[in-house]
Image 1: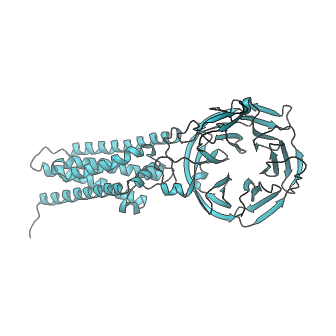
Image 2: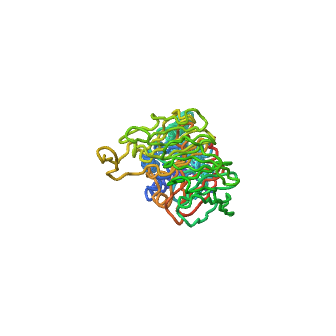
Image 3: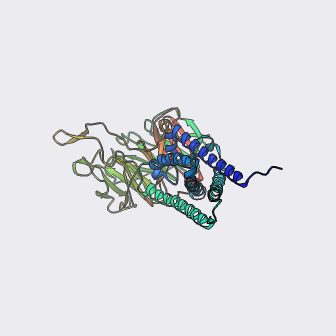
Length: 505
């Protein structure tokens, strides 16, 4: 019986291992190159290394190709196998961190490997780590088969060092990337898997509606054109109801009536009168006139007796935030330091006024720059923050007309933050600015919603709300379980997933 020399077996084993590594790395590198933009986008959305996506995307490809050549060439084979061990350890540590510590699970590989589950990919990587170790020891045995000074202890020591260093590098990348992404975001969005899921849609036919409020059982729609009528649906959009308020439109010179529903009350506001009326939704009758409110351009109800407003009662008609309390001796308290002027104090401070009843937070988000602030119920500033885009100053020009008596925008203006909603500690912002590594198709067919934690003033995640028959997002509102969006004439309901719910404090 013919015996195969041990040396030949070792040589075949090493050759096979090296060929597998070379094939794996070349295949992976070529797959990434052929779909490089998608690969870079996926890395940018990773919950571990988002902040370094630009550098890592090229570095990984280059390293994979270099290592592939090292393992093929006999003189550099040992070094190539150690490099393979390090790289596969990093990949394995990456997947372990994704599965156990990541806020969501992305995809960042190409070709056939993309079809593996993350658990299968983890096992696949471990197998290659073991193969690298076997190749290292067998290759050194083959190189020094005629020598007596082969040190397995030294090889073991180096291997352990490589594994520890590779794992440490990935852990450091993870923690530093998390800090950068949440607090010093370089305009990279993160898209977890399905933080919201489509639930229902109804076409309400007219584009004059807006979302007026939410109760435990219904969502209420106001109508700018017919303000006395309230349209409501159950949360599945199945049961439709129309209510008529007992509102005498001729009793006051109403011009811009807005209805706010905060059960058990509803409120009617019109800053041109000015007026703030309150009634109960059980019969839709107005029962109280909250007198003493000044003229205003925006008003948000805080409770049954108070509201936060934006007025022009300031120098040169600049915007100013004020707190109104109908039960106080001093009914109105102006907070002139809240809005920060950049040009005229009117257009440059324009934005959205919001209030979180659950957290008792006033929130103001600017339209034309990446800034917002929070204040308590009395209008005391709590914190200032920024959205993740890079537009910190308004880009348009303002001209003075009529000898300084009026102002007008005299250049194109770019909207940064188009719509927003607040719920408990979270701020939801419809951003109009495209970030790094954005998926072009996703951007073109959806509204991108960025989520911020108002307690920590950090960016948390982003998700798309897809266009329906319309491509204009008119209203946005959030409840415990649902997100409601008015898109054109379509009222759409998305259910909040556990990924998003756990961010709500």
